[in-house]
Amino acid sequence: MSVEFRMPSLGPDMEAGTLVEWRVSPGTAVHRGDVMALVETEKGIIDVEIFHDGTVEQLLVAKGAHVPVGTVLAILSGDAHATSRSASAREEPVAAASSAASPVVPVPPPAAAAAESASHPKVSPAARARARALGVDLQSLQGTGPGGVITLADVERLAAPPSPSRAPQVAMRHAIAAAMSRANREIPHYYLASTIDFTPLRARLEAINRSRAVEQRVLYAAAVIRAVAHAAREIPGFNGHYRDETFVPSVPVHVGVAVAQRGGGLVAPALLDAADKTLDELMTALSDLVARARGGHLRASELSLATITVTSLGEGSVETVFPVIFPDQVAIVGVGSPTERPWIVDGKVTARWVLNLSLAGDHRVSDGRAGARFLERVAARIVAEST
Amino acid sequence: MTEPLADRVLKVLLAVAPDIDAQAIVPEASLRDQFDFDSMDTLQFAIALKREFGVDVPDSDFRELATLDRCVKYLATRLAVQPGA
Figure (spheres, rainbow over the protein chains, first blue to last red):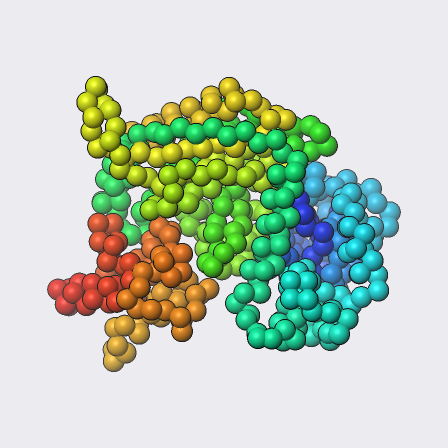
């Protein structure tokens, strides 16, 4: 039984990716979760894993090739039973295509992009976006990337004055614009918010951290993410994806975490199986994820599997976040800055640390009443984290 | 160790946040304002400082890591009372 390894979709608006490096060669034995290749997208260079055990038979796409999502990149002989843990239709399309070159995932590139790729040189998505932003004619460029691919650096060289630090941000801004435009076009959002007494959790984390070495300390974000993960598992209608006019609930809870990039832009990779982790495990996973979101080597699974997202703007920022749902997800939780406020406890006004939690829900899937229950459960879980 | 403390701290900072521009750092300006430093960045900075200098910065002293200048002064004090570090 042969298995096809394809160019994954790492976001609803990804059309294609550039294969920048193979990590395997024909004959390599691979196991589920191994990194097969590095792919350049607007979100940077991503490590793409295989979700089967098997042996690489043939690499079908050369280094440097820019190919549409769904293109078969390699053929493996493998154990068909060791299937994807992702259970993601997008990542694991049924191996039914007879033509190796035809994308199985029905993501037709827009007409303009298709026409361009037919007659134009190969261009990385980041370079294409940058060229568009700068008004650079791609025809006039000689690609210096692998296989003659026009890279971001090639576009930058032509554009003056050079500002290499801005380039990836322009590409990322383009990707964010595409995803958020789609969200606002297609998803009928509703918004709810509650302010909760954050003092007990803050006190508990302070007590934990006081007794620990710096490497073992826990940020409140980890506790809030854990509370959201549990609520997502317990209250139906918020964990999963909306695809083909249907809500597809997810059993695993993979919490996307919006990670700001320095100087602008963000990515929201997933903390996989967040509801199954202890607070310490979740903190370790969060540190690792944030480091890679800013420094590189996010995995394809992390960029494609999130089932709900949390966005926290951090201490000293804003009181309330009004977030936008990442398509095809159906909910996102916003976390404001912990703030000291007058609060009433047992009939007396007292100073407490409070935290505002907001929810953007998808009206195609849930209503305000269910959303309120969800936020109440998050708050209850935060109380549970405090003891 | 002859390398000035400030240079060593800067190296640690750049190792933690390789995406910031070393030339652009204003030592007396807050890292948060300059580079969007958040609580995760500060924690990772503190972990890396411990690795380099053997100084464990308690949560209550994290404000001392707000600027490069302040951080250098703080470490100088901590290292002076911690000769073994």
